[in-house]
Image 1 (cartoon, rainbow, N blue to C red):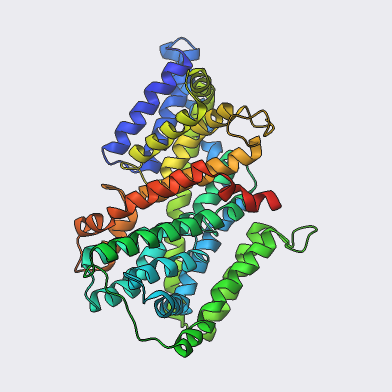
Image 2: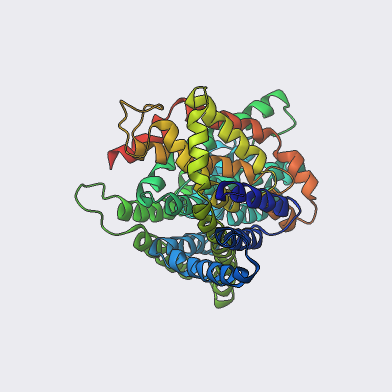
Length: 466
């Protein structure tokens, strides 16, 4: 077998292991190691006395990958972004956001559910983790919705779907991972997520209002708040926007000139500011300990997946599978846009069996070069491109699209992680209840993807200002 055939065989084996329930990190590491042994042994003609040499070289090659790639300053953004979210919860920012949203938009049909979506979007702006967002609002928003008569499955679905917004709205851990894998500017990608994240939240809200108007008892409005109460609810929520401004200003100096700092420094400063707010609000050592432990658990999970997948990625490089896939994609006799849509549909199917981060880490080394080749290459100008944008802008646009697909995967059965988190927080809900409640939001996500594909300027406007 030639390297390409070995690459395909090992990749199929990896998918089988994942579908059978093996953790992505371990499945990828095992597949990568076996693939490296296979390729090195094949170079020696499968001679029995050369197997030991192939094993030694493969183990050394695999062993160098985790440290060399993960010892990256950019990856330190991930734990700081996650920590910001947990500290914001103890600072009372989540409750303040939900209370403000309830008083301002609760009068709409399905107003409390709309408030939940807007509050999760606001919290996503200081939390880099969808799981944390879903867990927090399962405690805050679901009891409020059940109290006034919401269907418990729909209430759970709103929280699970709203939690996905943390994947797109900066600071986003998944966007950071994408930027590192494809070697693109982290700051521009984080900026690119703001408007698509807001659009996604608005489409969720429109879906909820439409459902509540069609089924009046489905989502009763919350009325009776005076303008004085509404205005009084705003100041406690302002710290969220203050933290966002700190992070954005460090990534992109709005006054021109050089940036004030790196994204890593902005994330660290944001975490420190939220920590000070939490202490001021009365956070105690036990709560700080919980926040640090939860951050460590989630960060270790993400880094473990990265370590395992990077071994598999190194094997793909030796097999030259990304180059072969790019050549095949560009040889198809159909429009590049149709090919891109088919790739996104493949992500939707793959996300039913894999977690979001693992899916992106496994596929991007192969898919990203193919999409860039479809557009005309990494250095193509907008005038000569297939999608009407330069190579760097195409990388940003495609990044937002695949991260939105990753959001979609967080609520699709049977792996949808956000649904399991919401069910785990609420004893009165089963996972099946949450999956049923989240079903309408599949339509909203499909509409959002279609809008972002049809109007790339929604994604590219902010990064183009840098």
